[in-house]
Image 1 (cartoon, rainbow, N blue to C red):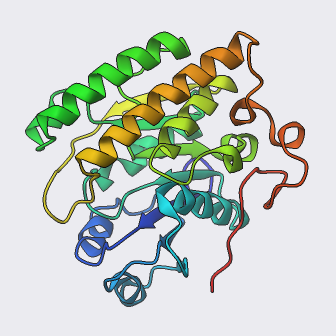
Image 2 (cartoon, rainbow, N blue to C red):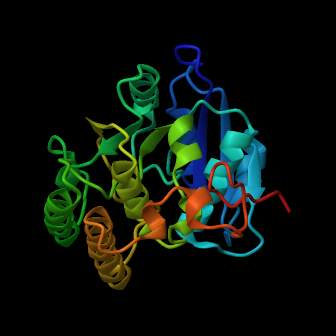
Image 3 (tube, rainbow, N blue to C red):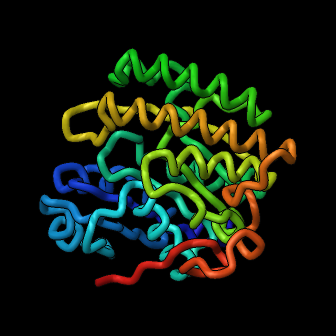
Length: 268
């Protein structure tokens, strides 16, 4: 526990057999109460590796996408009594050593959301981020800061910590099951007035680290801009958008937990 808060680290996994062990080996002791791996129909030995390491896991019988994986992660973490949920990619791209710092920032009550930013400091390019991705990251972040009215160093990191209240409030069922889920979730956090903090996080790019390709990046970039425009239209009252409306008033008959706005999945 951290400050009396139960900390659960969720691991959205797809073909993470080769990197899961080294990722977990660098998590600081005495911080995490429970790990939970959600396997999105991997075609390698990710589940067997999780079993070998003693990590609780859930398996999607079919691939639900990166966003769909996270929806399961957060729903199950809430069911297991998490007060703070930290998403850590099991591909060893982000430093697990920062979990304690992120958890304490949320536990302090000063921040509802904490992001591990690859852009703060000089770690992104040194860690091997492709130049085109770095430029796109900076350009998209500039536009988003303008349209969302906040000032973040980046919106595209996959290293995040959330308080329970955030996950119980956001209408995540309205968000995409694809890669743009990350971006939509942050836009929701801004829309609902949650405080977002950032810390500098080293990053690593190597063959086993999952990363979207160029065509996927283009689709993601378009989705990011669309999300920012949707936010602004909603904020101006020109379009009522279910992405930014409390779940109970946005959808009456969607599947999942109406309190948390998350479609719950059970182990097969």
